[in-house]
Image (cartoon, rainbow, N blue to C red; front, top):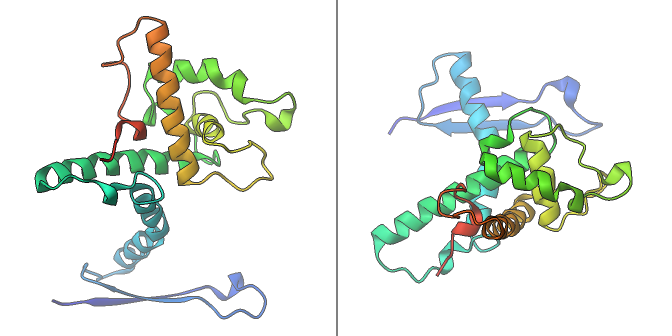
Length: 203
């Protein structure tokens, strides 16, 4: 196996106080023949925290995949794929929470689910402006704000930002609300929703 070494050193202008410049030395099996390829590897490495958070969602603090009693490899593999899909949705909401992009809520939710979000929004907002959903309607950030509220986040900008576990709890709560909405309106739940975290039952 051949490895390439990439060294990335922090620009001196961004160093805080008397701290030392950050220096990464990355080993990779990917080809690194020019600056663009090196930058691509560095960008992948920068995503490590997001990947770790996704696996945290899959494991004991979230979906608790490792507690599964399934013994057959093929079934466990399918369950892992479902859990990973749910974790990706959780991370999409977590990364969208700041509203830095205008990604649509349809990235995660169906039109029917977005309709339910519109109906429950007033129940999740407070009376003051600080307790209102600050994001543009039908954006993923708008939906993430409400999912976080359902997950136990208080909604204040000064509060710690909602993380993956809060989003997971919120998605699970919303899934139950949406199914209740469908039942109340005589709508079949079999074809009116996307796959969400609440659809993964670890046994």
